[in-house]
Length: 499
Ligand SMILES: Nc1ncnc2c1ncn2[C@@H]1O[C@H](COP(=O)(O)OP(=O)(O)O)[C@@H](O)[C@H]1O
Ligand SMILES: O=P(O)(O)OC[C@H](O)CO
Image 1 (cartoon, rainbow, N blue to C red):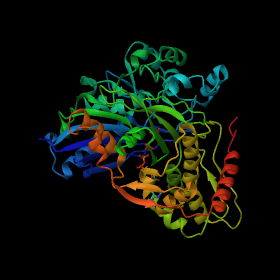
Image 2 (cartoon, rainbow, N blue to C red):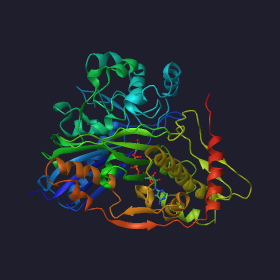
Image 3 (cartoon, helix red, strand yellow):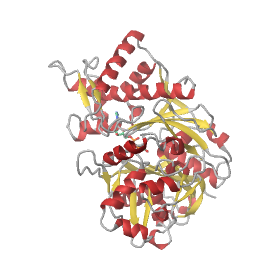
Image 4 (spheres, helix red, strand yellow):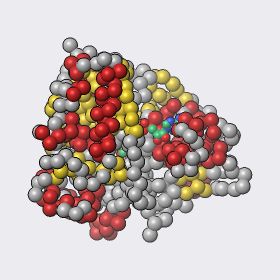
């Protein structure tokens, strides 16, 4: 009998394959980064063929490392960077253009055009989302309008659209030889093409954006069997879970009750609160989105605060300024100084997401003097994450009417003690990290395991959650208020930069 569950986590920075046991502990893991392609300012792309190759490599490596056979896995779940848009030819399997990554701002003009016609919130009631460069719908439109022959091929039924989940499942289940073309409600909710209530593609928005219905995947639940893997090391294993990565982290953190929330610190930062079967509209700049849907049960919704640039700013310091060699160097560098030296770094590299939704904002380093050194810059980089999370948490508490007793965290940045302590100080709340920090992959594994009966129910999953570390607030109110005041002031300096 199969003793494990596999999870593919295809993130913005890297791809992982993780094998979990029944208690949610990691048995085997392999991870590989892929190239970040920046063809022009504000453009961000990935090569879908490279992503698929990296996945083949990490699956092969993680299975081989522990001598695992396909029959050792009860099922595989998929989780993925959301919104990132791939359009490919279903006869050749080749993408017609690179994947346009969620952070890409190339559709800024189209957003402005649609906003001028009906306001930024014209699709909010139906989709939960404001018009912004972030979501997939306008990215698909860009490909159809700008890649030679793409629109005609799409209309002829030769092209398929998918977010990364769809592209991976299609390839994993046979590709040109009968791959299944599906997505789940959480991923579909990020396209701005799905109606939150009906959980179906919305014909009016498709017509407005000029997107042929036939290129879209079928929308399914997040936990059901979609097909079987055809790829060697996992051949015939059921593909049974699909969740966007932030929703997967909500699932992996066992936030199954309304009012429970998590915050994931990766390339960007994403706070999600479970709102149960209720669709809660936001008045404070959050998104209304799908939380998850278990097959045969009602959909569960969420409020989300999305921040585009958090860990990516650490990468930028490493790759573009070469101030550090690796991400972990930022903490010792930031510890060479006592405070930020008056520096505030607002990383509006992709405009500002929640709670502002301003595509035309661009990054700013404010408060520079000759006193400032690279230690202060490093500190300002880390503090930028914490300040942005404070803005989102304030919005979340107002929109939901729920005050969080503490903040459950996960993601690549939560190993950084300086950041987590500052986060707790600036929120004036305890910040908590669970034992298994790979909650994203764990959530996908949980969904797949529930679908095939490997796990009985969500109560069994709640019992797996265990606290690893807790940071407690230790900052005077006056100091906290002063820091936050200057952060807010620095944010205003980013507004309306592009014209
Ligand atoms: N010690 C650290 N301090 C601060 N940031 C870190 C540290 N280690 C990793 N990071 C950042 O965390 C991010 C990777 O987190 P991860 O959750 O793997 O991201 P993703 O799922 O978006 O690919 C990178 O942007 C990296 O810069
Ligand atoms: O790949 P991550 O973890 O940065 O997550 C990206 C988000 O899904 C974008 O919405």
